[in-house]
Image (cartoon, rainbow, N blue to C red; front, side, top):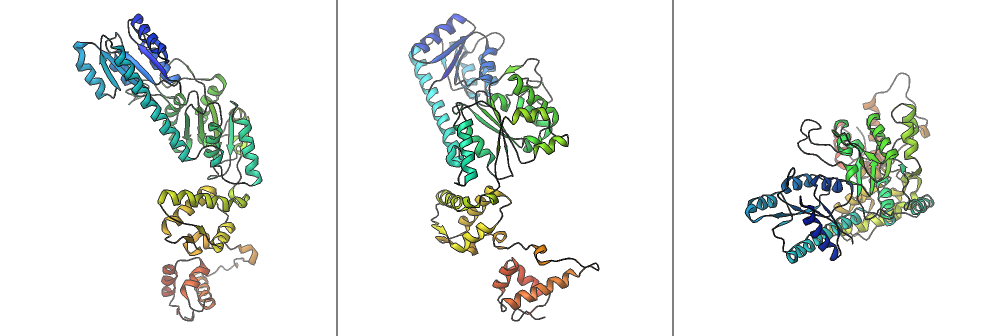
Length: 457
């Protein structure tokens, strides 16, 4: 694993000597006498470690540490200080410097310090990668074997190594972010950051600064400069979920980013070059949004270089048994349960259901069922009410409201009576017929003074 180190000292020769020694020990280093250059490097490319002198004109080591700490993925910082400024070193440690050492530099000690710092960076990277695996990344996270899903996986394998922009469309809960993460994990950018932004979750007043970052003093409350998500994903992949929720003004800035590969943080007069791949997603029909004047047509064509349409779960029901098995194993492991399977009646109900919330809803149902079930086999009684309740197509029964209207209370009472008679007075059976809980039906029977035995008033 290659690491990036910058050595900064107002005496450039001293910085170059230290950098050369580190290079001789196999590290990738750069020497500079300009702290501002270090900040630019950290904003625009992955930087692991900064070794900086404390006493420098303009911006000293403490101020440089503060500036670097405000970045989304800050590098570790080692402060070099003179014997008479130990108090500054203590201040640096309070501001979360990795370590400090006094000058003149003991190179053996510095090399050990660098080794320890980069080992910490390695562990941090591995931890983030492990979290990414747990979140579900790669093609293995796209569970199912239906024809349409296999075609999508083939597309992902083909397009992942490219740098083309991608637009993923589909209903909420179909797995758009999983697909985006799979593309990133198979791309040449897999070792660089993957940043995901839910555009619908960030207020319009904040989305621009969140994406593009800002300089100190750009607006009230901007006491320090801050790197945006775009800068943090430099070299990697930026996933913009629900992109159709962006304002037209932000869409225009995003278009310039795609065209020119550069951004201008709020409050800055200079542009910053960036190298990112953009994957966008939406649950809306973009063509309709364009017609309604809510989405820029030129941005749509820039994003839609490679379109991926994810089908709703109701259109790939052959994948439901595979998904159920996957979620059973997942939540059994997480919750230390021992659920072997679901019975045939439960599977039939799950296959019959239309899943308006798609895979996300199915996952939630299986997780809830495992948490509340104490048996090794899931029965239909363990399933949520909305799954057990059969939907009635009123058109099938040619049901029409009369011109004179109806008395809803009388209609409800009549349905309750019929349900009790059909179930021979057994409340649990009647409740199942009506898609109600036992307590709800019991309350309604008492409300209408209906006998539990015969269904008679």
